[in-house]
Length: 70
Image (cartoon, rainbow, N blue to C red; front, side, top):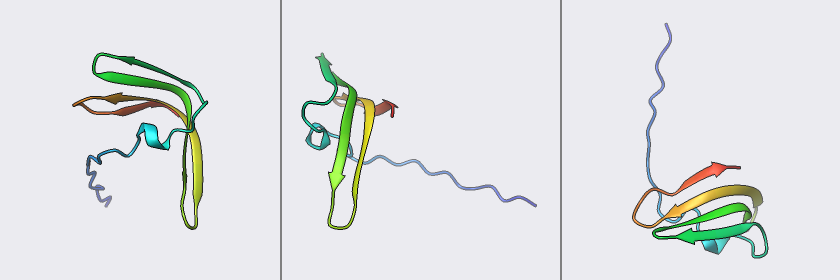
């Protein structure tokens, strides 16, 4: 008998922001209520781990932000 996995959704505030985007990578286009980032390098350096990846994402004012490609 297979058990069904419970899927939960949740929202985190400010997971991706312009503060984690490396300057000089990709392009940014802003319009009314949104900014679209294309091929930007998102990175984080912590005490034990460093990570980076390139992504296309959109920051929506008052709405849901989303990653469109990585």
